[in-house]
Length: 447
Image (tube, rainbow, N blue to C red; front, side):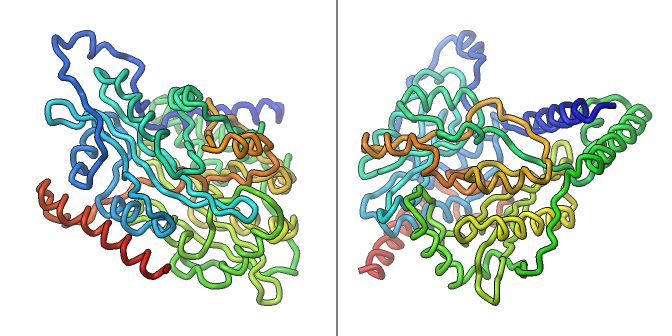
């Protein structure tokens, strides 16, 4: 069998698995329910409140979106470090309400970015979902998102084509990097990957076992012949694994140095923000931090996310973030190789790389990864200042990765066994008041 043919088949198989594990479209294409309904109650938009948690959770469940937890809402809108840098009362999102029921939702998460010597306030949209009869009015949720004041940068990170079209309609632009929609990946466990693929094809027990064996042999042979694996033998660097909670002051030094390397659009990577970003309550997966040292100095790090699809059993690791001094290829190689080993030890079937500047991607390309394209651009942005928006049309100024937006900020999570009193009045009084108290305390500390 030709290696080119194997590469195409493996890339196609991975793409099928990725598409299968995606959630249903947030704004369904089929409006048959709306046509059949004899009467549709009018819907009104309003700002979301913490007391909407259970109604939003039920709405998401109706459309097979990933489960969230009340603890994660608290993390996003009470403990977010970006809230310390604004005096604006930022909405946690918006809901559509009809006849007392929540029929639409869009979350609104505050972030910080650095561009040159400027700190930019940013927001990312999250979890757009609307019941079919309210699709048309559902666009008012997106309009509310883009109408926000005191925002420098609007971001949407999604691979769903329908949401991408909505972003374009509101004058957002796709990330100006032609290869950002191309994922580099390696198959780490050929037989495990092949079994998941055969189970998805539903060929029956005997054919599945035979198909898995043949497919695994073909992938394994191709990996050896084409050397599709990460390897690094330099002894100049030491790579150490730590937990997210152990991210400390040396990361701050690296972050300050990174900002001085040139005028780039960089999401905030201060230690507090990194810990907040990757410490997800009830996380169903895991995040591992790989630190690269040269003579005891931190010169780079990579954060690897490991996730399991509970529907089909596929296990995937991704490079969620990677930073190296001056984008040094030697540091990147050391971190790539460590991430490859980490993913294998985690039992993942596949290791994926999405985004990052061309120089960093080129290092990964040396190890002959497979390639696949997303069905739609996974990153859109809009700058409030037209001059800034034009400047960002230059792909070279972006340092974009899965760390941006909500791509790795939101993951499937388990709820705690005991939730707070979920009566609307109680939740409104406690959660919303806590938000205000936290903001007042944070502003006092800053001043």
